[in-house]
Structures are given as structure tokens and as C-alpha cells.
Amino acid sequence: MDKIIFLIQCEDRKGLLAAISQYFSSRGYNILHCQQHSDTRAGRYYMRLELDQHDLSTTRKEFQHEFSQFAEPLQLTWECHFTDYRNRVAILVSKTSHCLFDLLSRQHEGDLTCDIPLIISNHPDLEYIADQFRIPYYYLPIEKGKKEQQEQKIRDLLAKHDIDLVVLARYMQILTAEFTHEYHGRIINIHHAFLPAFQGANPYLRAYERGVKMIGATAHYASEDLDQGPIIEQDVVRVNHELSPEGLKHVGKDVERQVLSRAVQAHLEHRIIMFDNRTVVFNAEH
Image 1 (cartoon, rainbow, N blue to C red):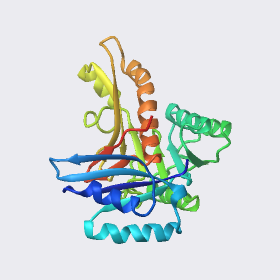
Image 2 (cartoon, helix red, strand yellow):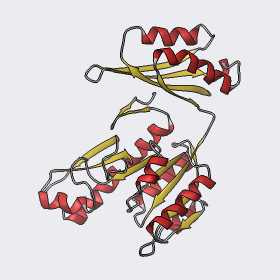
Image 3 (cartoon, rainbow, N blue to C red):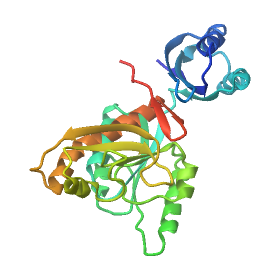
């Protein structure tokens, strides 16, 4: 079923659920599903609402304009998404293959509803995976002193292909502030550690040196501050003293795959609302 999904947030107060529900029901829209959360500590209200798209009787532009007039006096911050639109996703990688292959497999099987028109890398190593899925692979090496020029080529490709979401599937480069600002809330990174612990490079080695008993992975929206953007998804697995740094890395691959795919899926299903440096992630429907 094609749906219209609203993500709404505002200052928390009484009567919001009733007012928003009444707005749609009075106009003949069937509310298929509604989730809400009140953050009493921050005084914020969050809502995810699904409507039956077949009830739409105007153009989409008119529909959103009418809602904006309703939302303005209530000071609602909102997004509107139509599920018959497939997001266009670009994947950026370096030399590590497991997250890339997992995402492509899930998309191929229909578990991730999106189009992936290109893969970009600063190394040629993973072109064979792109070839298996018949997706164009752009090798953009970084020459000494020319990192910004390489990044501009990436941004040009993203614009050319009308990319909605960028996934850093173990892309081992730091993005500029200009890049993260341009795609604010639309770049998902997988970090192979349970943030905020072990930020930056070589987290498995530092976890080994610290003698941790659990290792994890964190998917977050990229920001100009390395590994400090809003967290979307995390998970851990228990380990013991017998594992070397390489052993920890091997065990961590499964966690990285699962955490990144769940974060990407939540974004594609419009289940995430950001506020400040935090996220509200609504549960998937069963």
C-alpha cells in the first residue's frame, strides 16, 4: 500500500495528538498507523503518522501547502514523504568489503527499498563487487595535497545522480564540513566501535589494548566532528581475552553489517527524527 508518512516534532504540550489527528480525519484521510513520543526532560514531542495515499484528492504540492498552513500556528517542524518514491542511495567505500556486499545483497533481495545508481571509492579494490550487481563504480584516488578536489568530484557525482542518501560503508576518509553541511541528516556512517568509546582510527586495536569484554558498532549521521554525529543504531557482542585485534575485527564484521543495514533501513522507512545531536528512532512495523 502506498502511504504518506509525516515526521513531526515540536515543543510538547497538551492536545497535539488530538489536533493533528482531527486535521487529517476531517479531510477524509485514513490514519493507518501513529507513533508518538514525549521527551519530558527536553519538553519535546515527536510523532510519526502514516496515511493512506489513495485518500489524496489534491496535488502533492497543494496537500503539503495546506498542512504547512495548519502547522505554522502550532510551530510544528515536519517532513512529508510519499512511499511510492524510491530513495536514491550512493555508497562510499575504501578497501573493506563486508558492509558494501551486505547492503547490495539486501537491496537486491528487496529488504532495502531504494535505488543504488553508483558506488564511489578512493581505491579500485572493490570494483568486482559492483560488477556483480551491475552498478557503476567510480574510482576517485586521493592525490597528495588534492583531497578537496577529490571530494568535489564526489559531490559532483552525487548531484548528477540526484542522490538522496549517502552511506559510508567503511569509507576511511574524513569529510569536510562543507560536505556534511550540504548533506545534513543524509549521510550515514558505520563506526566499528560502540561510541562514544574508541572514536577515530584503529578502534579494535585500542579495544584489545583496553581488554574490553564487549565490542560493538555504531551507525550515526555524519557531522563535521569526527564520529560525533547523532547516533541511529548500535549493537554489541561479547568477547574474551583470547581474541587478538584481528580476531576482534573478524567478530565485529557481523555487528557492523547488522547495525549499518538497520540504520539505513530506518532512514529509508522514514522512522528517524533528529533534534540537536540526538535521534528518535521509531520501531518498524511488524
